Length: 507
Image 1: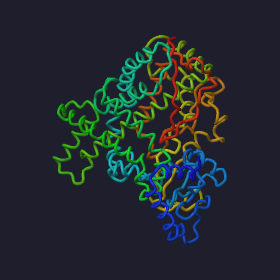
Image 2 (image 1 turned 135 degrees about the vertical axis):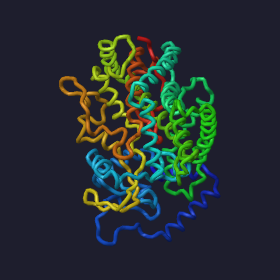
Image 3 (image 1 turned 180 degrees about the horizontal axis):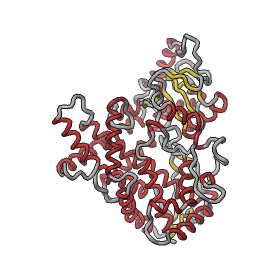
Image 4 (image 1 turned 90 degrees about the vertical axis):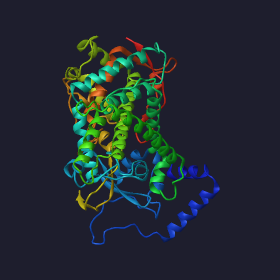
């Protein structure tokens, strides 16, 4: 769907009055809009397609497949180029080498978060994911150190994941080989890992509040990448009435009520000498700063709620989505699945998985990495913003410019991957079958804004995937061949598989 077609559909679905008002406003703004700004001292800016007044490059972009549209533009305009999202200038960084140079080599200059209108509306600068400045620095530093204390990348986290596997596997077994949707059980399992670290306890899969919280997160993540929200982000004053914006904010409000109640319960049980999760540690830190009369402390209840909400959302959606892709790809490519089964049987047998097994499972490790590369679930990362004027790759980029780190362009970089458009675990194997790291593997982004839960996510993917493959063979539903399994993603803020069902056959 083109941007023009999508905009027409959006407008036609609404009443005539707001449509007329929007059209009138657009024409008035077009008449009075000034030319897009450019440096007056002759400094060279990144090239790009010529924008229209007010609309920018909207009519030239397919907002339903924006990362692919930007990859196509990179072929014509180079690895650093400019597009206009409405009136907002956006610099796109494409290709592994450019991404690495910008996010790591110029980490400070490209290290701020650009907060789109929908994320401003839903977070107001609180928390970690959609914040900047001293608040972001303090809260991120606190979250990283606390997550490490409670097992991120350590034995404690491994025990939590393996314990969750003991709850997840019976859910798969209960279907007795009949096809089912893997979305809910995988979302509940991955969410419980972050809950056990944040709150100090897991939830039963039948817990109604837990089910509702996970459902709202999945729904909101999908909607924030929708066509409606992308248009709203470009024209927030004109399109604040769109349905998806109202739904995202309603979900936020309902989730915050649940978080408030869970925080209240944790506070009642708080023992400062024996913290059981991040929330307990936050309460203790908050109390210490209040007693010390710290001015402008960032450890307040508002930030606590949003830190918890950010971690819950990030820890639930991305890992569960990757695991859904993993099982779908195993059903799609049974020959690859059989090689994983053979390696697991040879190295691990029927005993409990151990994260240390990873070094002895090169093919399985390669498959997991290739799943992450191929699925490409966060194709454009979360937008960045320049903190100062910077000359990069010979181009002048002014302070405050929005930046898209196009992760798709690294994970599918034709100069880095032998067969970028094919699911091929050999991308991570040498000629002797040993696992090899690849520099262009950037599913967690890089630099100052790299995913803070990367270590935990890697461990979860390995232990959940291998524990499930150790016990099950995944196949398409009866009457559907492997070739008929659809690998086209469902576009949202993250790229999910299309709705599907799989059979988990006990080995």
